Amino acid sequence: MTAPNEIEIAPPPEDIHAGSSRRSFLKGAALTGATTLAALGGLATTASAQQRDEDNDSMKSEHDQLKKGDRDILVAAEIAEALAVTTYSNIIDIAPFFKALASDDQGYLIAARQEEMSHYLLEQSVTDQFTPFTQFFYPPKMFADAQTTLNVLVTLEDAFIAAYLVGVRNFSTRNLRVTAARIMGIESDHRTLARVLGPNVTAPFGGPLETITGIQGVAESVDPPNNNGYERTLCWTSIDQALAALTPFVDFNAAKAAGFDTSQAFPFQPFNPTLPNPLGDFVSFSGC
Image (cartoon, rainbow, N blue to C red; front, top):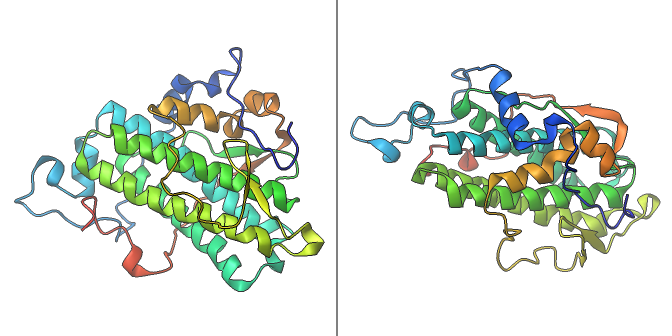
């Protein structure tokens, strides 16, 4: 295990548990069972009769025309969003430094939790499948040590940004590509705001934190927190690469190999989200 400033996501070893492979991710999703979310109104509008093929922005249209490659990306995104919800929930609920943050910093974390849950439900409504993984592992001191918490949080947001850019690259329809870009933008907000928190961590919890280490393993100054001129792709071109990055968080053997704390698994607890502002709601796949 690396020092608190250098959290790593290790690639899965060749002899890892079957759940760590891409095939098991997708097989697990298929076995989890299907559900529809028609009761969650407001996630999409009804498309007009004149719209056809990929110009149709309805949930039903996206579901009915979904290709295998699209489904693979969406299921991986569901896993990522479930992990994000679980991460933000536990920061809010059990991280000691959270209550010492200023109200606007607390508000970012609370809003991010709502947004990640909304992303999950949107993706699930298209696939009609639950996430195949409902409990997650983290590095030691994940929610006890503020530096570790923010390192891992930024690491995850880095991974989510790159994963949604894979969707922008590889989704088969314009509507899904636009939707991936829209979600990626929110993950980018989350990465920047997580870096904003560093200097605001109070002294009793090890602050102020002046550097945060993300997925690339380099301690980066928090000044400025918005330090990307362009989003980082991590050179990912396939959803397999995103799945490999997530593996230590979802698979016991991979977590153990990466030096994560396997004595406790944190459950994904879905809920019905309320977004901070109705102007930022989903509206439709075409983005209008």
